[in-house]
Image (cartoon, rainbow over the protein chains, first blue to last red):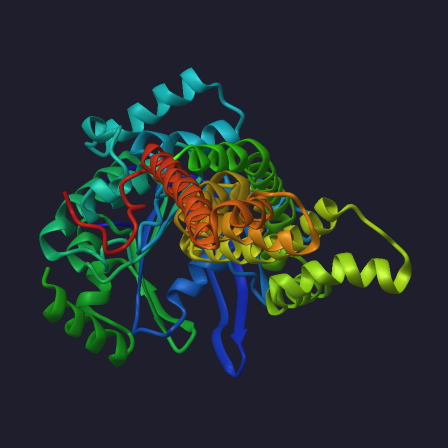
Length: 257
Length: 231
């Protein structure tokens, strides 16, 4: 259970089992397994190069794992016969570098996937996109191009883009690492409210303030595997491994609360 | 003075139309062949990529005049295939331009960042949708400035087909000055050539201006050519 009993947790949304990934000689992921239940927020931490981002990409198959299985609800999306585009449409992904479509306005960025992937009509999709932009506080920037937005605003639009597909869960790959310090807050506060609204979120981030506020669990990865996981308070007060405690101290020092 | 006007009239009426027609045909042929080659060079299977690369390197590696002679004198003298000069010129320069244009489009496609494709796939687009909806619209904008260069060189290189007797602007120029010099003296050679040069310059200038206008119309924040002065 999280620090606050914010909501009751639902059925299993995501199940990852024994995922391995090797690049050349580099065995990045060594059999990672985890589960997410509806409404849960988990934060993955760990030293760089330990496979956190690769794990996220293996979940929505932007990177194809060498071994292991991923289930979204009761469908195995790693199954060769599964339509991966359909699965990805239900998994939001927020990139470290935002990756907004540069030639489209904020509104069109949010609207394009509902229209072209889900076949929604233009009027309805526009309405939906405006709602999602409002949700991240950027309705007034609907007609701005990405280059006209600050990093924080771009990241909020990219969150709106993910939300517009009504995803089963959203994967966040270091969503605030590319941001200037004064812009991190606006993105985190959007993420906090999403978590409180019951969105299922798997977040790679070293923002411990965020983790303590809303994470049900912190997952500590090292050397391509999960070393330890548990509620934030437990990991902070009583880590099972010395490495976990050391690492938590280090990032708390670096990133603050 | 009337000699100048007469010559100018002849150049514009009897030389210029062929030059313009050939330029447009070459650019069209260059796009129609160059774009698919660029596309396949980026997204095709390996053997197809190799083929496209070979094609592009062959036609960029041979001088335009040599290509023209190959497709005209070469074909007719060695194989008895006699194409009309205009057609030989069109094939030779068209293949050449398609090779150059393929590199413009390839560069533009490849300079769209990898993250755009990843983001498109992450919201559930197929690879084809991602290419069509996200990558190509960006690549198109990026390819306008280099394509403007290609327009300029294609236009001026049409003058090379005068070597095989296509009656275009330069051929018309030489016809005029060979006649005029007998009547008014050899200084007129220079005058007529300058007239022809002016016509090429005007075409290049206004063509570039038109493409610059298109570039402006399509301008989107974030697609400014690097180094452009900030307003």
